Length: 201
Image (tube, rainbow, N blue to C red):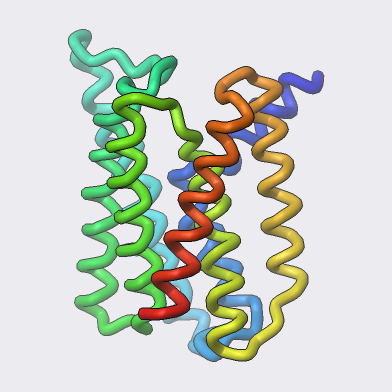
């Protein structure tokens, strides 16, 4: 039962869904852009979900039809192609948000995420750094940076993301997908990158 629950947590908080979760939290955490209309929020969410979630999954599904491609993800190097696909998809999301003149912070969030993915690609050539925890760390860093930068205190959102980060890390350990230092390194990479870029850019 515990392992089944860990699998569910791993799927729900897969890196392809974390940006959409992040934008939902941004919209309902009291930040200055929380007051845009629901229609505008929905449009941004559709762009984010399509570019960071649906598009990478669709690309992987199409590639998996070819028997030459094996996506077991058991080693770090096997994750390079999926990560590259994700980086291109995230950048497409950035371009689409730029086209609709979205708030700069939305575009910064995606372009900073692209940077995290690129670093993960490089590190994955040698180590299996956790992309799950890089996503959760990035979300935590983004919320904290926005909080300090805008003087807003979305304490419930920050606490929730920290608790969820712990649950995701525990799930990955339970499933034996990563070692502890893989999780720590991934979380630190995501947190530091998103925090510094969103706070200072």
